[in-house]
Length: 427
Image (cartoon, rainbow, N blue to C red):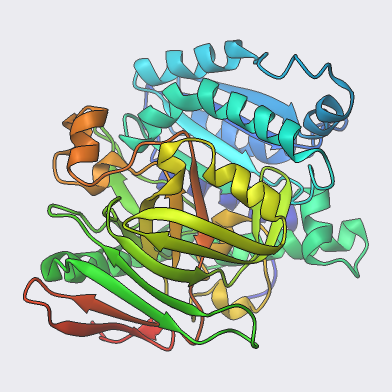
């Protein structure tokens, strides 16, 4: 089909976010957080306004946006008093909690500069990140239990676009990135809503297949990529009662929603006490404005015992040292290497996209809804069942066209789940 004007694509994107991502119900309120570079207007304002129009068209009672200027974080670390990093704008927390407690919807728009905090004092960066995680934890807890319908999407931030397409002008880079966003979120399809419905059904079928298997563990094997690092030889346990989840979930407020756009994954709960071996990351990780590259993570009895990285090792170690739960895993996700994002053949330097190009695992907090009855458990009960509790939830990518994954059954037999990065079984 011929390429459509950007404004028309933006309107279709907003409609899909409201109708598929949030599945906003008449009478709900919507709060939007948008973190990018503030200009006049804020560079994400055009998308926020289209989403607002679509939300009101779906019957929203009220829409509010919290715009943030990411450059303020860098300026703070460079110039603020060293003893001031525990100060946090709690009015944001209060506003979002008010929406959640009322059963309303939450949308996050990201497009941050992957190198925003690069080169700054890692100690100060770590303190700022920890302050955010501690203050944001009441919201994180509501998200991980699917208290309300929520969604995470992206907009083409200028610095992010230049990171992906460094040889282009800012305007051309943003144009290319918007095109990539529209393609990977199926907005370029003749009927994006129908395309999403078919995609959701396909992912659900794969999740149901894995659910029926009830593997007790997964074993990953991959030779070193281009001679870098030790490769991957890693066994990850799955607790009793784990649930395989795909694109669509049911919120406690009764709304079926799709939390990530794009999404290509099926995921579940790893056992926090059963992870052994070494994992070599296959994509860089942008964490807290620092790009961590060519890194390995070593596990014993569920704990991370060592990390190494060619670049950003201090930031990676700070992540692991955040709290006890940051030394363990909270998510395991499977994605074929031939996913639409994987086939693009370039990095996005953004977890929302790169995690949908590759199998991945997450350091830190687990989603309660990935365990049967998990949303009804307190922290200690969830931990006893194999779940993980942490301030963090940070995905990093471990899949590639070389990776093989076996499922280990209750009787110790092995079955192929993935071969050379692709599903071993056609459904």
